[in-house]
Image (cartoon, rainbow, N blue to C red; front, side):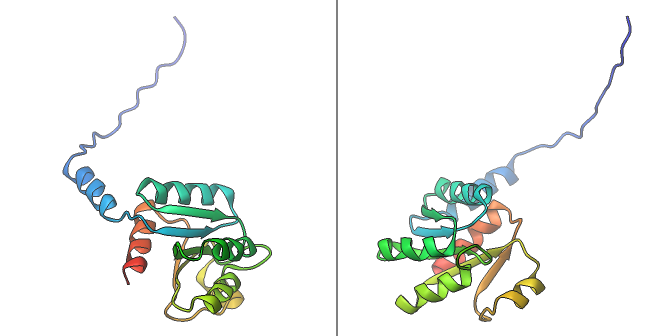
Length: 152
C-alpha cells in the first residue's frame, strides 16, 4: 500500500503522409555508386556506412587518410565519390584528397567535420568549390549532399 505513482502524458503524434513522403525522398537519394569513406571516429564511420549502404551505395571505409589513398589505389576504377573527414591522424582528409586528385583530377569529394568552420579555415586551406558538411548531420541531409555531388 505504499509507493509512488507517476503518470506521464505525451502528446499524440500522427504519422502518415509526412512519413511516407520521407521514405520516398530517401529512396530517391539512394544509388549504386561506390563511395570511399575515411573517418577516424569508429562510431561515426559505422553509422555513415550503414546509412549509405541501406540505400544501395557500396562503401569502402577506412580510419585515416593514408589508408584512404591506399584503398583508392586498389579500387580506383570503382570509386565515384570521396567522403572524407577533414581532420584525421596520419594524413588529413585534405592531404588524402590532394594525393588522389593528382591521380584523378575530376574525382568528386564531400568533406565532413566536427570542428567549427573557423577552426577548419585555420587548419586547412580548402577551395571555394568544395562542399563541407558539419557534424552532427542528419542521415537525410547526408544523403542529399552525397546525391547532389554525385549528380554534378
